[in-house]
Image 1 (cartoon, rainbow over the protein chains, first blue to last red):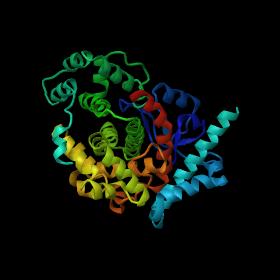
Image 2: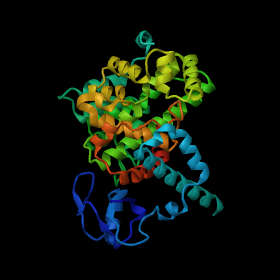
Image 3: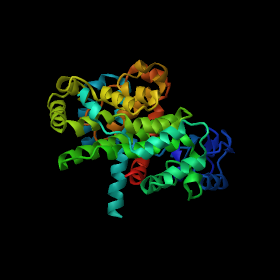
Image 4: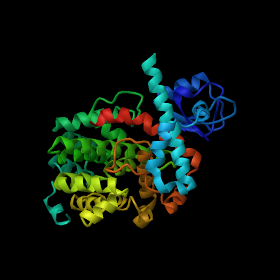
Amino acid sequence: MPILNLDDVKPGMTLAEAVRNHQDQLLLDGGRRITEKSIRIFKSWGIRRVAVKFGRTGDHPGDGVAAAGLATAIEEGLRARFGDGLSDPLMVAIMQAAGRQLAARQKKKTGDVRS
Amino acid sequence: MIARVEDLPTLPRTVLRITEMVNDPRASARDLSRIITDDQVLTARLLKLVNSSFYGFPQRVATVTGAIVLIGFDAVRNLLLTTSVFDLFPSRTSRDRRHQESLWDHSLACAIGAKAVGEVLRHEKLEELFVAGLLHDIGKIVAMAQLPDEFERITVRAREGRMMISEAETEILGCTHAEIGRLLLNRWKLPVKLMNTIAFHHAPLAAGGFALETSIVHLADILARALQLGSGGDDRVPPLDTSAWELLRLKTSSLEPIMSTMLDEFEDISAFLR
């Protein structure tokens, strides 16, 4: 169940969990289809992230980055930091997730500088 | 080192008065507001925090009383406490300042991570988790301020010996930053939950009734290290305690969205707390 930043949420996606405001009032129930209006309501309440169900190809924001693989320099740096801990599959999962996130940020920063 | 804890600074008078008032059931939001507004720095910090993305309120909060009503007494106490704590240990040299800033960044990343994990777990006290994350390495700040040369030796030993900083601390100081943090919080008479979370963040299940919160901070510490946000004094990512992971009952797939949140919020909140 991925949690997306509101900026990445598109009308037509399905909410995986109910969204409530800080007063615990229900804004939209889990299982409901997200519309432009619901995104506006979430924004007005300062909601930053929502849990969605993935149903369409291309919804996953990390797809491109994952496909590109870890940048070698990032992976080497991470392997040194994790050391012997990489005998644990969970630590490998943490390292890979960190690698994808760091690579995505680096890519975004490079893109920002170019544009 | 333990003996030197007696020489540690006390909490600022205003924060002490706020702590007392939070424990007083007769105190009102207006009483608390009066004390905070006497201190311009605390007033500015509180208003900055309630208007930051940490809370994400849709409308601007303009008054201290309004902020107290919205986030509650405990949250006000904890947030003002944490933003004041780092002021108590000024760095003496530019080297210490660099170490301290880097440790501050690591602590902030851990705080944001603890809150993000808490959100996924639907924990009720997110701001308590944030505070515990922010203060989890306070023992290192103490060691850095009280024993700067020894602390430098510890970081060098950890780096060259490829060991965790706790191991180097035990070798050089005879105790770890977690133990120093526990002593400090005990001296400041802060809540037992916060004290235990800090004392056991490397061995969460030993925290007894607070094992869940301690496991959350333990995970957040590891994620902050993996994302290279600041430095805890060494560059190692320690292994995740298996029992802590089982207690959290998180899915591996939830880790990446948590890390994404940490990276997103780090710069934003950092700007408000500095």
